[in-house]
Image 1 (cartoon, rainbow, N blue to C red):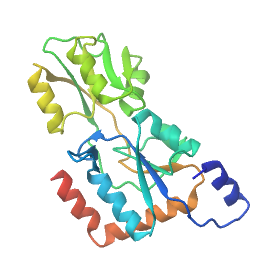
Image 2: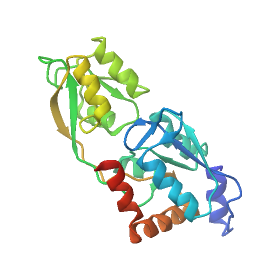
Image 3: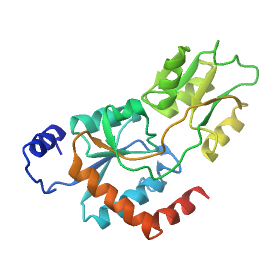
Image 4: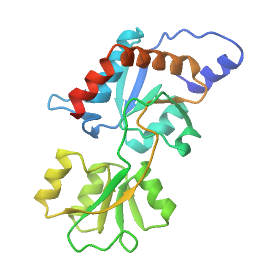
Length: 235
């Protein structure tokens, strides 16, 4: 699983055989991409996608949960072989890791939630999850924000009035709508945060694993499996 060892072997022209389990890291409070179901099992669209890949490529796959801001550093350090979980592909992230082909599109419009009358983002204090494109967006605009390790902490800070707004992937999720309704909140402001779709990431230079993942995704796209999973989870 050590990424640097893999890169060194590839540089020497050594063909590596995957003997150890492929460790898949994800943050799972994010339906329908990944979430932990009532039985304590990681479920969702990307769980099904990765399970299909593992079966087709004859990989032994093990899942590990981590905070979102630990995923890319973890795959870079060799803690994980693959990371996923609504992982948007951006140029900043491409500089750090290699991505598979995208297997799900995203809506670039992202929303701030807060209590009616809350100040606009330019003058507000906004809660955001660390390591996300939303945090990068706020930093790039020079806006005030507080970053939290988990989405739950983001929402709790908003509920307690520690911040004015929360920014995240909220608009299409019934679980967030329930939170908004229960606490007198609303979708107040929006920004465009474009990306190149959702994909899995591996350590830079891990070409064997990347090719394996992409080949399986090609097969899933060709035989309709990927579309069937999209329909199951998003329609």
